[in-house]
Length: 608
Image (cartoon, rainbow, N blue to C red; front, side, top):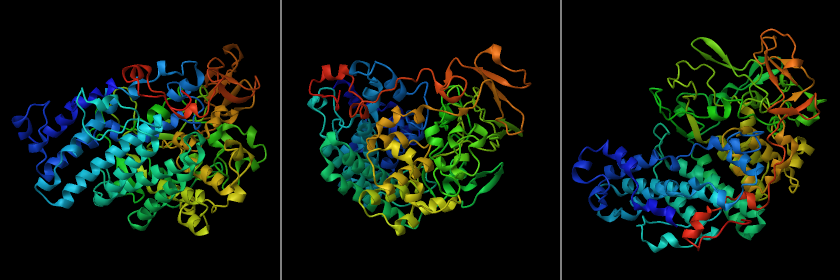
């Protein structure tokens, strides 16, 4: 497997970061030579090295980006998932080499270099301090392999830095059961040894390891339960139980809580939830007791910077739009499915927000949604090109200071990586999958999230409708169905949806019309108000000859999109008419064909 040549010590960037904090390091050793017998002498040495790991992108992925690959989005113009489902190029010959080339494996070598060469018994410093940093390295290796498992199912397990001629470079993939056990062992070590001190929550601490264990054990347990091709369903419950134990440790720690209860009247029947919004629109959420870990942004707002590129998903309506499927997943304010509202399937954009779960108006841009920049409103213009539902989650209502990137893109608020709300949902779902969900658990989990946004308490029998059943036709348990809906609306835009679709064996949701549809347009030509001032701003017409003379209206014509009934209906993308999802094949990504030539022992995932 030639792409693992990254095991030739490709740590230049990492070492640069380390040497910036240790002036003596380069005076003692060349840049390309790490002498661990000398370097890994003290706790400070380990700390410097681990700080470098924290800045490596392959070990600190911003998960929100994955949401554009899911049915929460009607169609993503530069989305790998949608290109994959819409083209005939789905083959190992056209596989994304970036997932398997040397850069994709660099981070693993960096972690293994440390883990293989730290001699705990011969280091200076407190043993607990030493084990703390070793535990963080185990956490990062687990993170790395979890991301690979999500893509490929199986990859080779490597726990040492390999030289270019090492035979292990050409070994077969590690069977999933063995691979996952290695990951669990790493996380167990991390939980047992990483300290609880959270600092400002931008570095790894014990509760990060517990949150990742809660997340991954649920993923693996449900994946095994619902994926028949694995033949591992008999072992699913041990992982579900593992998830509940990790969640309970977090819940019983007393360190976290659901914050910001209360709603705000936004007029025209709309209700918002400022406490929920603050999780995603704060410059510094470290003081928020729901936040377990977050990614900081560049304090100088200079470019390039560690910036919230959620703008890529939400700031360009030419590329992305949220789906009708997501919009209709939000309940009414009295806790009923939206399908129970008369004429729900013919509601115009300006009408869908009235009397709904307040999280809807904190997720999809409502009429009048805007930010304030230099004292002036900057409206979220819900253009119809991709569907007309623009995402508002993550945007700062009042920017306060300007982003210095000359392109004007990007946000500078912090991005949650782990939050307590997700842990509660993990716990509730794992308990339901184990047949152990009850009122006490509902009150500990879902109802705390409901209380924050002023929603009625969880009632699965009331909340399951035919639309929800159509998403998961193989599930009859109403509790599991209702919890899947709750998870979707609470975590929308945070990068969990594709992972959830995959683990539930629910890829056929991509086929459903409701997943491809955007806003409803009742007629052509049609003008509507997106700034909330009562004056139309945007218009849709079949062609330029059909537009009206409304002043101050920006017009769009049916070139990049179409309406299902010709002159009315839901907005659809012209490029997105023939999706196909093959099970179990499309739950996995193929190994690039060049790698199987170099290493004939590599096999393709199921269906490839």
